[in-house]
Length: 364
Image (cartoon, rainbow, N blue to C red; front, side):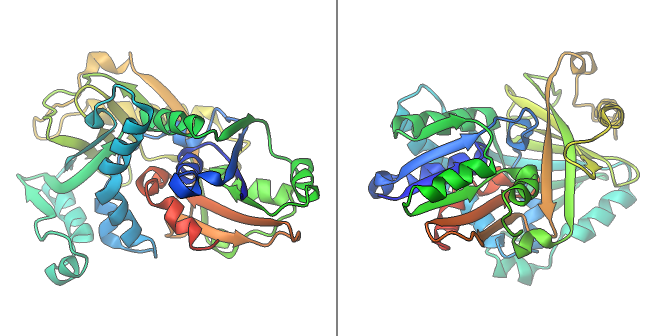
């Protein structure tokens, strides 16, 4: 039996625990330790699995993103079957089209040139040649986008883990807790999945920061709004719609099927996870709502009167360089303890969820 402690109960922590508790691995003694911070990024994610970002292929986990999307539906199907809940797969995960709206023909063509790769590159990545298409004067259409209901997926994972007897512990992981584990005299793996708090936690535990986390860091705080049936002219075939402002720096993202939708925007960069000006965030959110309400090319798709009734969640996200997934072994000075860090940039944790366990296990 292997003893495993996963620090953090976001989507990556839950997904890793799900992988490490499967079938023959079920002999592992797994515990998830989390303080359930109200600003946790996983609980404030729109969880739109935008494929267009994959076309850049800037990090070593490019193929993992594509592989994860291919197996997402079967992964969720198996989770539903295991706990025997009355859930339709399409209420948790949905494939569909994506579309971007721009303020002008010029801005649309500028973005198209930035994201469209030539046919040879697409062929090399086994992506269809019609993956990105211009539509009308101000739109770009994307094939094979996807969306996942973040709340339902995380509850589903939690239910599966409880059934598999994974232990959930609600507390802050401190240096004292680390010392207790080292004194047990057992071989123990510790996996840190603490998002924006990972670096500060490792410093508190006096564990050296891994190399990949030393790259240019970007910490942001953002709000996601939730509601039902809030978009007009939103066809069932779409799962992702983005409106891009004239300055091309601000955008608002609408995702989900008709009966379960979310709205999120470019996030606000902050320097300290413990200190941020809520006034600045409120102003950013006003900008988001304004952008939602505007009409480009007479294509209104948001019912203005419903905006004020939306629920919302705010959370912190982090990214390191161009890597959308950081998985590294840690240098813990204790023979009994082996440590790892696993962090998804911004909302990428959901994109990697079905595959993150296999990627981590390669380091074991």
